[in-house]
Length: 315
Image: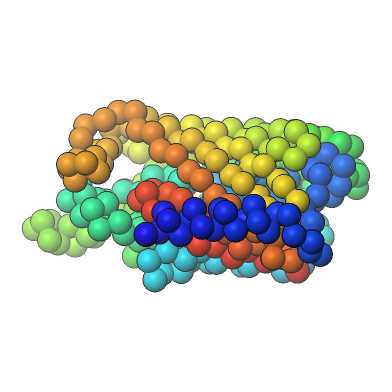
C-alpha cells in the first residue's frame, strides 16, 4: 500500500512539474542555490539530519532558520538548523544510524530480525549537536564559487550519559564538492534479557570521505564510510547518489553497498543470512511547494524497504 502511495506521489510530481507556480529550483552551475543549504558535503542526500551526523561541516551556514521532519510508521524524526551567514548550528534527537545514508546500527541478532520482520525503524539512543564555520568564501556563485567549511559535532548518549566528539571539513570549488569527517561514537546494549549485565558499552569510530559534482541540473555524489569497532573487522559502506533537479521537483536515486560481517535479512524467508556484501537501493521525490519548502516521499530511507515522508523548510 505504501509503495502504491509512493507511485501516486511520483506521478503527482510530474503533473506538478508542468504547472505554473512561484517556486523554481535553480541551475546549480549558474545560480546560488540556497534551498536548505545545498552545495556542501554530500549535497544529493535528501536528509540533512543524516548528512550532518556524518559530517558536521555540512550544517548550512546561510542566514536563516531551517527545519526538517521525517515521518515513518507514526514516529517522527526532526532536525533544526540556524545560520547566521558565517556560522550554522543544528540539533537532532536522532543520529542517522541504520538509515540508508548513515552508519549501521548495532543490536542483538534476534532484535534485528524481529525489527526487520515488523518493518520498524532503528531506535536511536543519541542527541546530536553540530556547528559549522564558513572559514573562507570568495562570495561568488555557480561555477565561480569557492567555499570552505569546518564543523564540530557532539553526540550525547541518553543511556550511557556520555558525550562523544567529532569534526569535519567540506568545501565547494565550482561544480565540485568534497568532505572529510571523523567522529567517535558508542552503542549501549541492554543484555538483561539474556542474563548478562544490564548495560554494556561498545565504542567505535566513523570516518567519512565524500566527493561530488554538479552537471547543470544533475548532482552526483560518492561517499565512503569506514566504521572501526575494536576487536572487530572493519565495516565499509559505499554510497553513490544522483539527484535530478527539475523545475519544481527533486528526483533522487541511490545505491548502498555495505561490506561487513553483520547478518543480512532475507525477506523471502524472513530469516538472517551470513552475507558479507549487502546491497540496498533508494528512491526519493521532493516537490517544491514554495521556494522555501519541500515535501517528499522516500523509499527505503530506514532500510526496511518501505515508504517514509518528509518536510523540509528554510527561511
